[in-house]
Image 1 (cartoon, rainbow over the protein chains, first blue to last red):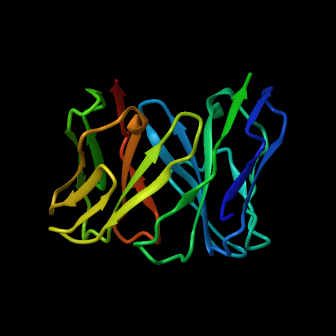
Image 2 (spheres, rainbow over the protein chains, first blue to last red):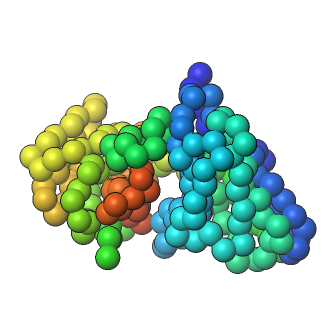
Amino acid sequence: EAQVTQNPRYLITVTGKKLTVTCSQNMNHEYMSWYRQDPGLGLRQIYYSMNVEVTDKGDVPEGYKVSRKEKRNFPLILESPSPNQTSLYFCASSLFAGGSNQPQHFGDGTRLSIL
Amino acid sequence: EDQVTQSPEALRLQEGESSSLNCSYTVSGLRGLFWYRQDPGKGPEFLFTLYSAGEEKEKERLKATLTKKESFLHITAPKPEDSATYLCAVPVSGGYNKLIFGAGTRLAVHP
């Protein structure tokens, strides 16, 4: 089954404790992206990757890191999480980068709480 | 500045009561508009892509239309299982598959 898989689905942690949210897609998609979703603000892009070893900042990249060493994986890293990073996070992928009419396929989300 | 605005913020319908959701956008050189459905606790699920003014797409009780300034998602004779948040998104001007999303319309259909 074609899918985008995120782990963990839920995480409660404390300020300053490094964490990684994994994302994997099995559709051989070139493009992958991370979003956060907050009430009243909608989905905002954190980072995106157009292919292996190619990443770039989205609209709200502060406090986050990403890497794209393999085509299928795009982990999101919070080196020193803070309470304002408490949010619902989504990973997405699409077939091609640069194809403006390519729909993105989303994972089921990671709900992150930073105390 | 690229912007996407959805209205209403929330909509409550009786089963069978048809209505429309609106997505207004300001972006230079529209290269597509996407509609998604999002259920609680789930990621957005792709519904439609519209590419040019006048285009229409249909899926079951949903029909999406596009003009030069806005898109409508028409829901005909909705059922309770159509209850969800509906999101629209457009590629930003000059962006490589970089999307800007509206805040969504929360639809509740009651029996």
